Image (cartoon, rainbow, N blue to C red; front, top):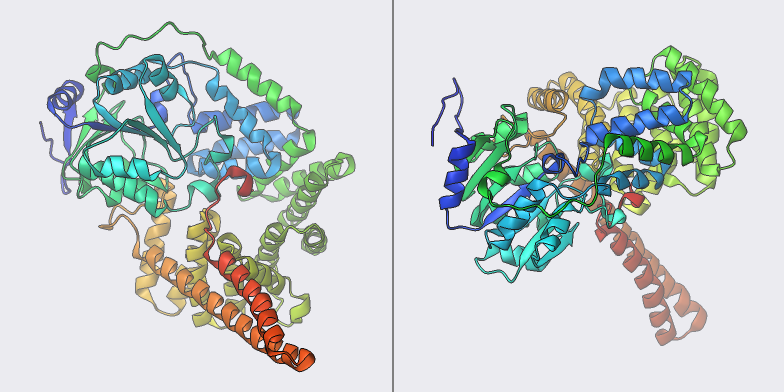
Length: 598
């Protein structure tokens, strides 16, 4: 293949569509197709990209809200900041405000039918050229094309099965596997779309599947940008040992992550497709059955408009308020939020929607400069969340309280909102809450001059935030850690934090192209610190449980005078306590469904 040299850096192979198609045709190895959203963009499937989908959802929300001053301002700020905002972060806000209604918007993905690329995939599979298909797409068009051409296959959604891992690790397979790690529209509970889902590292099972595919098969990546924070790092880890990889680029441009992979993988070739389909080039005899559905722009727009109109107005007000609050609100933004959330509070019969409106109103008051009233309003809504049994929301606002009004040093522990939030997070072993509380605790420690302790809390808090996929808190931790490290003259930590922040700003990703592993060492240090912190917490709980068992035994023995009764009673009560704590401690912190990520 033709190799074009890049000045002053490693040079990945580049080739044209014809060269790549010829090389793939000559290989006797089965293919593993890694398929992204670009494959479903062509007619008649016409699936929008995530960015286009979110923009369409926001536009439909503006229409449903009659284009108020709040929605217009939110759209203006979004237009200014969308290029530097993770789409998953906006999905998180949509789910928080609209709940499961956001899943209904995804139904527009099934209004079309398989396109020529989907049938090309099915044709290759029918000829026995494909061992497995790994796709980040939610739509069912690959499966539909396979069924239309009579191809037998098994589908894995979410976590991969052992059968898939075995098929990729050996040269024998019983059937074709279709693996959808980000979920499927046919199983809405499986969809990965929010920040706290997509931002989590891939599990060990997913890592093994991707690394086995790279090691044992010829991999063709098509329609995939490499912009996710879960699957791409797994690809990067397996790059060095890859058997043969082709990364297809629709036009003569690639994301920074794709270039990083190509430079790390000695067997990777970048395929410049120049607006043509590589799938159709390697399966030229593909015949598409008669199309039965078509997803026109007008149909999609009408469907979204009907969907948005059916959603209660307070939910849209909450979403646009939170969108503004996430985009560094100015004083005028805060006043708009206060005005419209007060209208929501007067009209909404939904208690949770009203609670979110109270929250947004309090934050709007603070953004508009009305600190005293904002603090009182914040305390009021925190009490409401506490009474409603919503510890996560309480913890989020406790962090806002600490971050905004960092002066609670002399407040008694019983009245300290941060102490309550920390207690909640410690009891649940929730990585998201522990990251938030660790960040807030570091602010308090820094305020009273305990800089070294603040550094340690920031490191562990960043590790918990990384585990939970909470990129907002992770970024805040790194910003403050960089400042603290500079104060302590810890140049290495300061430099690593600044480099990781620069990567986040430039690529909206955690992948660091300057590191051999693709990951900044500061993230590994944070992960290890979080692991040590959680281990200490577990040991402490077990110690407390053991003491409770001993005290229970002594008390029961004294009251019953029966050794057997005291023993069985102690073992039952203490065992139940320890079992509950160990189960909570060892429970996976992953959010298995979107319903658990809000």
